[in-house]
Image 1 (tube, rainbow, N blue to C red):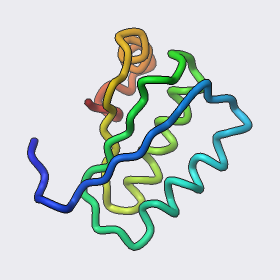
Image 2: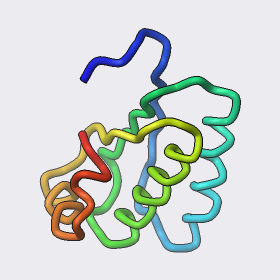
Image 3: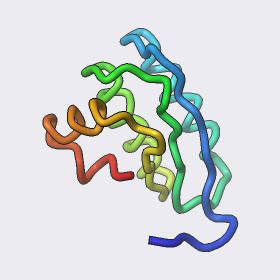
Length: 96
């Protein structure tokens, strides 16, 4: 679905993501979204591992975005990561 011009932003999550990274990552994304009028935040995830911690991080980022009136969409997700997101029942929560 197209978004109005100027209402999107892109950020990169590099991996590997470890559990200790989650609070800081959440906070940084909240700061990025504060004061922005973005409808969509594209999250580049080419360099992350396909594991439960990464999916947890991405779900938390989606929650942060929703609290800012925005939606995270994944870009560059590996097949393995997409499969794990789907297996964990989050395919509709973390769309491409």
